[in-house]
Amino acid sequence: DVVMTQSPLSLPVTLGQPASISCRSSQSLVYSDGNTYLNWFQQRPGQSPRRLIYKVSNRDSGVPDRFSGSGSGTDFTLKISRVEAEDVGVYYCMEATHWPPTFGQGTRLEIK
Amino acid sequence: EVQLVESGGGLVQPGGSLRLSCAASGFTFSDYWMSWVRQAPGKGLEWVANIKPGGSEKSYVDSVKGRFTISRDNAKNSLYLQMNSLRVDDTAVYYCWRGSAWGGDYWGQGTLVSVSS
Image (cartoon, rainbow over all chains, first blue to last red; front, side, top):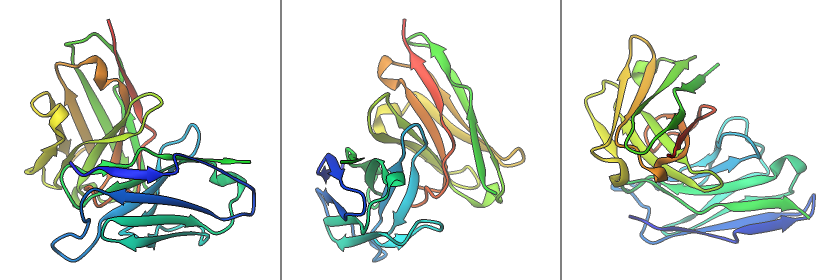
């Protein structure tokens, strides 16, 4: 199985400051169709996860534009340009290029 | 509005069985792959299984293969997960989500399965 490694696992951020989460895969996530199936999910406390980003950099409907995804191959990043209080929660990357799909361990974002 | 509502969770002894359901609304259910994902208490997310729109193709993670069966009833807009030979490490909140592994744009609220003696 592909191993997804996120860092940091804990991310204290001051309100209004940027935040960045890294996700590295043990294998390339480029699929045979040329797409890279790397998603990002947010799980707020007590809630179900919610998809933020699909195929590396595509923001889901309703996701604020302060969230952005980038990367290629085995190295990916989720960035929040200016952290707001509602961004508190755990963020997961997930690869869906290989079977079985696998998630990163999660990064807990908290307000300093 | 897309809605996914899971039900059927509960407390079961090791070796027991449970059947989870996911009622879908707000979209054409029969057009979409559907999936189950789980989250052990205080832990991360784990893929469980998915099923093609017509139900002919199903895939499972190795840890549940031979014990869990995913199915669907497109006439009832419902997704199911039959779980047999349950183990303590199957304890988790089980979520259904719309789509294959490439999907996940909508999730249900989850249903808790606790396996304990």
